[in-house]
Length: 159
Image 1: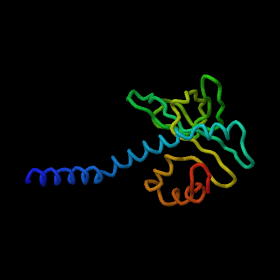
Image 2: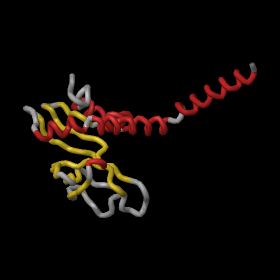
Image 3: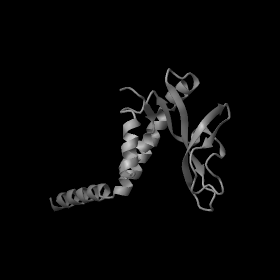
Image 4: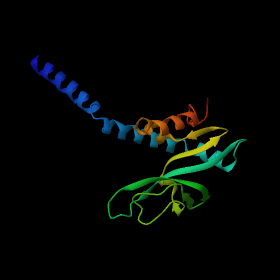
């Protein structure tokens, strides 16, 4: 009987420790957001190919291998996207931190497998931005408030 109680206490402690790590929880939420964005990428491509009325500013967030001698990737938004059968091309929307000497506006080529998020406007609402939605609590208040105003309540615009 004692071993059951000990096991229960250990299990509860493990769950508490897991949820007590906000960074681990944040990383899990980001991973889930990337999965959701990738899972709905066909929606983005359909709209990209034939935008509806008021749909514009199509962009993608992709994971690029770091160029600073460290392992890993840097995720960066790419705008002015063009899609070919074997690659995607676009322009960095902001200055990267770990991509060597690349600057905002650099032309990037990448594969669809590198895409981790997508976005476009539908009227005055911003669709997609799955990862941004997870990051809102970590942004400064003014930036988060501005984004909350333009983000659609549903990433695919089913409001």
